[in-house]
Amino acid sequence: MELTLGALYNNLQNLDFLDLAEQTTQDTAEQLLDWNKKQLYQGRSAEGDAMEPYKWESYAEQKHNMNPLPGFGFPDYKLTGAFYEAFKIEVTDGVAHVFSTDSKAEKLEKREGGMDANFEGNQQLGADRLYGLDPISQGGYLEQDFQPVYYEHIHRALKLI
Image 1 (cartoon, rainbow, N blue to C red):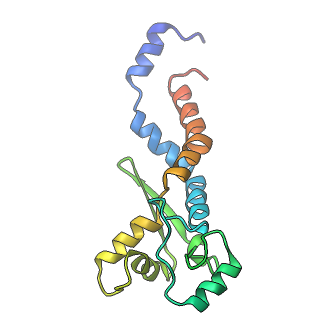
Image 2: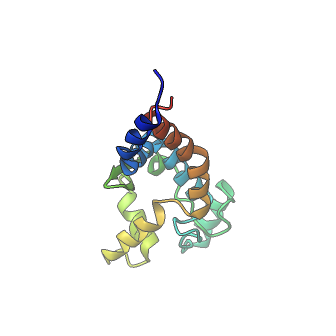
Image 3: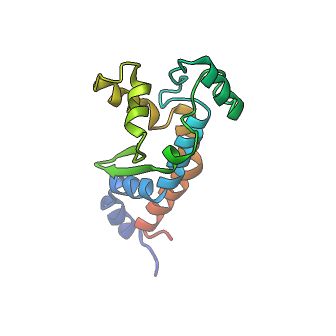
């Protein structure tokens, strides 16, 4: 079947770019989570800066011997891998929410949000720093994973493929 300019115009008028972006994010959710985990393993927050440093030098030394990428004294939040393995993503209203269902997640979120673990606001601050992509990871994810799938969805919606 040939696609006329009129049909292409109608397809374009009916295109819901936000819906396609949500679908693409869901289709590339595992890649997005992998970018987030790689970023944490390198000791970078979602803001692109270093994580809160360790309090105890002996533990910092032990962790540095396990993974020197974050730099001495800075966490990667990976000891057994359970925290990383429990990463999940939900896409609602055009926003991707990353979180971990690991039993340590709340404690780690509070720790990253500030040293006063009793202050509830610190948990959200920490979550905002742990989950999400910094500009470097965001660029990699968009270019390597999101864009090719998004363009394919657009081409299919326009009936070009």
